[in-house]
Image 1 (cartoon, rainbow over the protein chains, first blue to last red):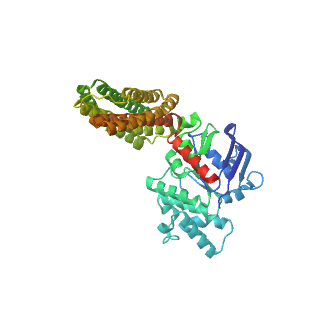
Image 2 (cartoon, rainbow over the protein chains, first blue to last red; image 1 turned 120 degrees about the vertical axis):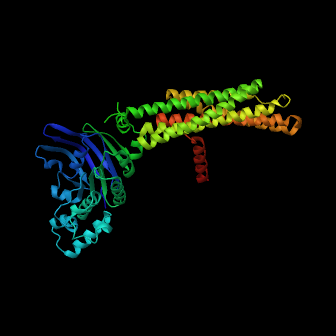
Image 3 (tube, rainbow over the protein chains, first blue to last red; image 1 turned 90 degrees about the vertical axis):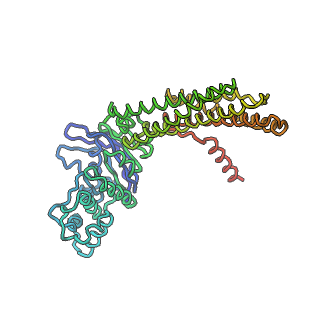
Length: 252
Length: 233
């Protein structure tokens, strides 16, 4: 099951660049939450702070508190533990090109010490079913490489890989921006199904996509969160003029 | 400022709706004038403007549909386009009501003048004022003016109820002027509908400007009160 995410006074820097400023936000469990805003506003940095990926850059720094469920991820856990609970899917599908479809999904499990073939088979099948890819690849699991799939299938394979380690949170950084409309629609349907089991945070530039898949939406601008509310409110009658100007295309 | 082409299309949509509004307002004023002076040439003008209103209604709906499909508007732009579509329909109905009044005037022209216990000119003035104010609210994007229009509707409703009561009595008791009373009753009903359309337009302006859906507030509140009483007993 998904868990709630509580972010308090989060600040992030790249060198001297203060990219996130005092973000406080409560993301509800088992919902999809969309983050929107112009390029460079800090939304991707924000999601990278939710699984401690931001700090992988040597000049990056984070202060503040992030709780995933009851786990304080900066004070009570190591990055590896955090990333096991928080899966991430990126803009461009990044399957391991030389691995089979099966091995792509099983890779995270193997790294975590799973060796029992029967257990691995079960989890791979379940993950591919959950990512709506099973029917398309079940006959070629070990014959075809991940790179042989189409862009949309590769992205669903990456989702399966993220789901295989049984996370509580799924972060998606523009997961459909490199996909055609049909593949995009499959990813959106998938998000809709997955949120009953996971807490989903999705960064997107596509506002219609945010409106379609998310119950909550946050608008970021210049490293600050300007407004966070129900998606319905944000897209029909936002409280802040800057949000309205952005979503109506008057700047950005 | 970005999306210049989109902004221009929104301005064009507003201009076309204002043109439509001008025609509808003129039609209702002409119909009232035709009733007042019993002039059939004015009725002809009302009929002619109805065709123009109908044409414009289709054009505005098409333009609004194109914007929804091509531009995926959000927030205030989305509310504006939805309001335009609804106001457009209400203005077309105002045109229909004007035509209906002018048809009754044509009918009455063939009958003897009768002294009827109904003040159609007063009711017409109030209904036309509501249309004028609701359109002013739209032009100025002013929710306060629109809310003021909402408070005027009860008076027109009351006049229509009074007209119904007095004119049906005339029909029962003075059968020789029953046809005139029936025509007056239908005019009263048309004016009451005009006031309802003005109310709808005012509600749409409030929704566009403030995002506040004020429709059916009274009936919803009354139902809640009724439910609360049922629960308590």
